[in-house]
Length: 402
Image: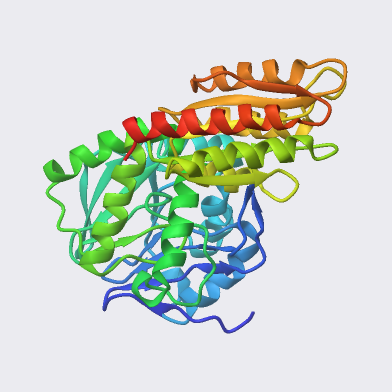
């Protein structure tokens, strides 16, 4: 077994997770900087393991634990989240460690048994229950649908650490354990991308949770998620909480995202003219040709946008398959409060523009201005119409957006 070592967080707590430098796709979400699977060891009379890691990193986790204590000294294991990047090593860990008890939320017990057909019992934790494990005190907060039904936060009272499972995390493989050791721009980008691609559909639950935080009376000195760096500085904790609050509100921003695909560059020319119309009004335009843009990058861009404009040529009486893929993905993310419109080119049948309009409507995007559909190669007059479409959408964003 490789000699991986634990990383000290406080005198009582160690990081014993794993770094996945290779991960580049997470359920269709492009993870260009890899990720971490964070697990935490809390020392005391009854040592506790908070979460485990993805199955193939079991040996790495156990080696890190062994660098601090004999793993068999662990008395309890807490599972905050049943998704297999955090529970994949649970069965094997239980078989090796033989803890006195394993804890999870009510839905966590169901999910873990359904996943693994377990041969050991899991103890259900009551929401907001406070439990003393030996000389260490913990409080458990149910966070259903952030982002699974089983999701739960574990708050370590002694050190003020909120073990937040997937909450307030990001996919970022880094050797720098704490957020303040990493580049702020990278943190913002990856935190926003994570929210946009994973938490956005559950924004109402995020808003509800953040509204409850004051009443929970938690003295949060550190937020330790299951992915990405740990937030330990007051300014960093404020940053991630404020960011989640803002993203959950799904406001209209003065930015238009234009994505499209093309056959012979007619749709490209139209997209450029639309973007120029947006820019002419002093509004930001982001143009994303689908031959060079991933669905998760588009999801990130619309997180802080106000308009979504989509274009495609017609092929076999359909929109391009790349657009169908994007719409399927974005529809599930449920971004609210967007305006937009469709555009496209065609040869002898122009169904694509109408199909895009339907997809935008299915996403609850408010259709404004008029769509632009042109035959074959756009003329100067056609491009003027495209410019006018971009300009009109930008003017509406200026009146509504932040």
